[in-house]
Image (cartoon, rainbow, N blue to C red; front, side, top):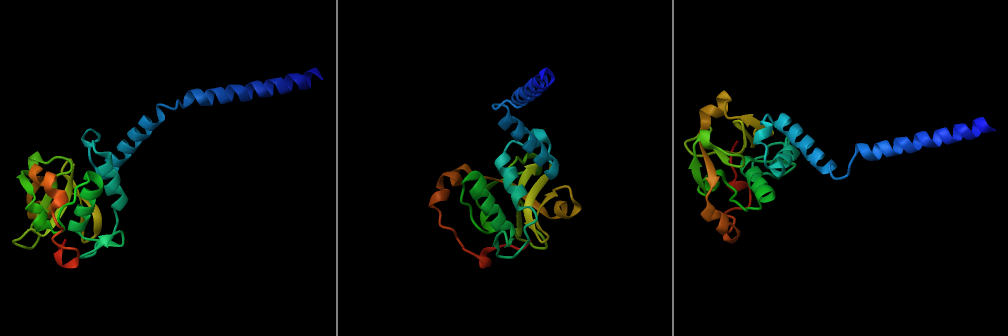
Length: 197
């Protein structure tokens, strides 16, 4: 009888010790910080942007969520989207700003920025097979940018020979426009105002 009682007591003491160890191993106030750090590390590796350059997690989560969405001229949903609609959607969701729908119209809202002065969230403009701006993307850091290309939403490098050849200018949204954006009518609502890749 003593052996059974001793065995039961030992069993419960081991369970109690394991339960206490689990509580100590996962303090509640550290979990969100650790999760944020892990997410930041993961997203920075996936997108090819240095961890130190990753400051806007909302931007990176948005881009990650849209990667692989197919390209569709005039599209503006997860079923298919073009470059200017992707940029407009990103600025709306991440920065709470309603920008215009066409890459040329968006360019009229920015102050030009040289390639070496680009910051996370700035815009990058291209003249692809055209004398006019025909493509726009969002700068992420480390010369990487997110955009809706002919292959779908992707992350590319400004150092890539193709994008380096057609790069026009970087742009930062003018502060004057930031205060007036809510009052501006959208110059277009669909396919006639969108861009080619």
